[in-house]
Length: 167
Picture (cartoon, rainbow, N blue to C red):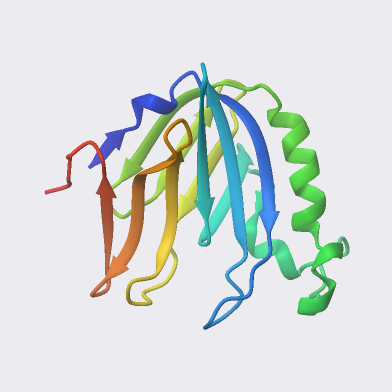
């Protein structure tokens, strides 16, 4: 079962930002993905798995933050040399001004956004830490959370301002 996110349809990709943070349990490094639709900025803040691909080619994978250009493991203090950082710049260039063709959220919390050039962005909840926030979607015109995806009792919980829910 899926729910369409019509407010993102037609929005243009605006930016992709890697925000390293220090978490309580582990580093909760965040990817921020921004879209613009008319005069409204939408921002997705994700601390779970994020993948951007075109067909079978990975353009960006959040788990590559500790992998270097030679596909070797990096220590945490060398994250600036990761292929994630390199791929962010490449992906930003490829997605510049691309429009969202479809956007949906699945019952398991997976967010899937498809662009006009065939690229797909997937954000996938990836752990069962109680009350963990996987991602949120903000509408920045009034700076409010539109969708919040968290974990509660080993289940994905999707809160939204639209009033819909999964059965």
